[in-house]
Every structure is written in structure tokens, then in C-alpha cells.
Image (cartoon, rainbow, N blue to C red; front, side, top):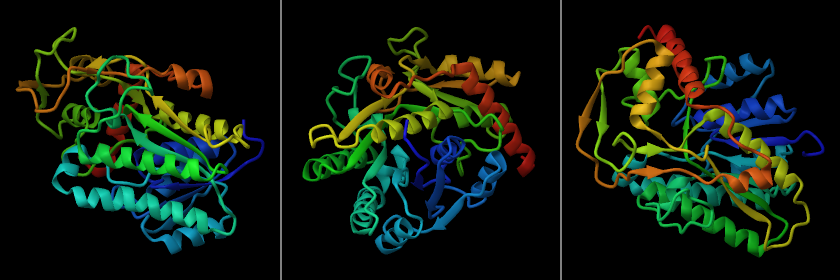
Length: 350
């Protein structure tokens, strides 16, 4: 465990994963500061976080590419560590506007690192929000951290490029302590039902799409392919409850706190965060129908180009080194998502 409460800056802290991590960190006794430009989130989330934890959250509105404002923020609030969530994250969109993705994700990360280096208090502890998309198509299952990396879309390539930059930085300066967390498929919501995944427009991810079908906002779910080599023919993915994921960030931060004085060969660490098992699309639909006591109409559509049959993580390294494993099952994921979706529908009248 870290030996004292830390001042922690969350870039993109009002987003889906950032907001849940903010709750976990605050409840663990740390002081959380949020830095966000709200391009993918709502400023009101800061007030919701205060309602959940009973403690205020200092929120700074700014773009991750504003190096001067970042440096000022790091110095003014005596930041000890940064958890870096900020970035664009839609795989499909990244193929349409790749330059925007490289500018926000890669250029934004460079801006953050420059601010951390220039800050008078020299915070050099960083947890980076990476992605399993860096692996590309699985060559074997389960995917461990030694699996070759070969991202197949601009979003994944930005994450991989950032990991490479962080590796170069760690080798150049052994006073840095860095963890790259490769997420699989985050789903679910906080138990309060007050924060969760609430995308603008048509959801890109399966769980919020299923939730919106169940609540009647969307007509039906398109299931892309039912002839894969899987138990029921539909695609299998490693879904992880967002609260398990948030707790993984706390575990990574604690781990880095124990790594003081590590040499340059070991001051950057990479961990998969997943459950270690896969669930099919139809398993997800069935579990959500159980959670909501409603039917989720679906239509079998042709396979999408680039989709694969199965993808799930090996989580042995995180269990061994972080002392972390996912605790919540698929039903808990669906139950919390449905509770959140009902609250969203009630508050918006939809």
C-alpha cells in the first residue's frame, strides 16, 4: 500500500472509467483532482461524484494539449501522481478522423509528460489508460502481456505509440514509475446508479446498446454474425465490470508506490485488466434480460469486416504482482447497468 494519502490528477476524470476510478481513489483516502475538457463527458459528473462520496472534487477545465495549464495544475495542487484517461476512444471513428485521434491521444500525452517534467514538484508517477486493442488479432488465447502487439486501427495504434513513448521515457530516466493498463471490455456502473456509461447518440459498445434496447430507446440489437467457432456462434469478448477496473487502478498505484528506487529495466510495467474469461453476445443478452425482466429483441446480421471470434485476457500477472483480480460476474455487470439505465431514463424522461 502507499504509505500516505496522495494528491492524484485524473486527466479525463469525468469520463466513464475516470469517474468510477475517482470514487475508488477518494474512498481509499486519496485527494483527487480532475482535469477534463468535457468533449466526451458532462461537467455535472463532478457534482455527482461529490454526492456519492460526500467529498468535493476539484475540477479544472482544460485541454490535455494545454501544457502550460497542465503544469500550473500540477504545481498549484502539489500533484504526486497522474492517472491518464484523457483521449478519444471510438475505434470506428478513429478510422474516419485519424489525425484528430493522433492529435488528442499522442500529442496530448506528450503535452502531459512535458508538463510533468517541467513542474517544480516533478511528479513522476503515471498510470496510463491503455487498451487490449494494442494486441490486434489474437495469435493465441488467453492473451498475456507477452503477446505480440499489432494494432489494427488508428485508435489502437495511438495507444501502442503512447506505450512506446512511455517505454523510451522510462529507459531514459529511471526516476519515473509508470504502469500501462491494457483494458479489455469495460461494462457496468457504480452501485449507486448515479454514474455509468451514457454515450451521446447511438452507442458503439454492446452493453449500453443492449440497455437502450431494453428500455425501449432503441428498437433492436444487431448481432453481427452467428457462425463463429464459439459455443453459440456469436463473438466472445472479455467483459470486465468498471468497478473492478477502477480498483485495478488503485492496485497499480499502490504497486508503483512500492517500486521506489527501481532501476530502468523495471520502472515501467504493463498489465492486462480483464476477467480471464469470455462471454458471448447472446450470453450478454440473456443476462441483461434477467437483470431487466424485459426482452431484448435482436437481429442476426452479417459479420463485420475485421471482427474476430474470441478475445479474452490472461490476468495472471496482475494477480501475482498487483494482488488484483476481478470479483464481479456478468450478472453483476448487467444488474448495475440496468439500474443506471433506469436512472438515466427517469432523469431525462426517455
